[in-house]
Length: 208
Ligand SMILES: N[C@@H](CCC(=O)N[C@@H](CS)C(=O)NCC(=O)O)C(=O)O
Image 1 (spheres, rainbow, N blue to C red):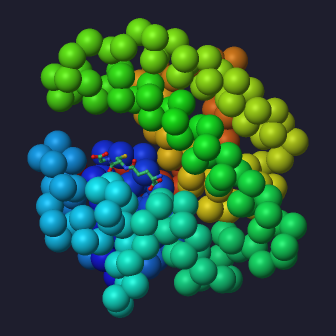
Image 2: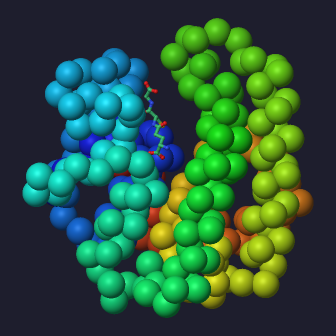
Image 3: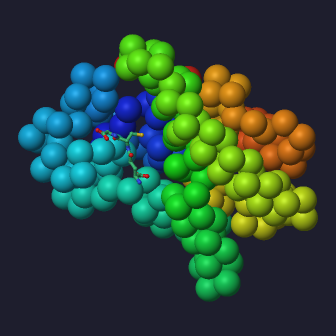
């Protein structure tokens, strides 16, 4: 199995962390976004969106990070990370869809404006975009914090792929100045994720 990733990205992190957590072997294929490697014809042939992450497994090619997470979890049904019960599965789907629709755009904008732009010399942060993303982050962080008030993990009391999807962004909380303050349940839950050896190992994934 090959994983095409740009390791500093949370969308890559979630895939690497899950593969590591499940003990799945993979070949790491770096797609260096700072060098425009996502535009190479051989990569575009895998993902016409010109975006990572991409999984390639014995001729099967899959893009969209949350779809990759579900595919990886299916390889270890005993892990419980993708429950087979239809309501529990729906709960996981709900939070993964919520992540890609709401959480990802808010977190990604804050990370791009505050972290990526200065790093790559792409100019000043866009104040209007930051304001909107901050407001969205606060709105959705309240939803997440409220959800975590009555359960240990995002989709219940057991770890699932939804925790990987949503938690990955919080690794950037300090550096991208996410306004997490006062949301103790989010902090408690993300600290638990940080305790996982695979989580720590993936944060330390080789820089590009
Ligand atoms: N919804 C997609 C988003 C993937 C995505 O936006 N990847 C970004 C980096 S984090 C990318 O490869 N961007 C390259 C580009 O837009 O040129 C997923 O979750 O996999």
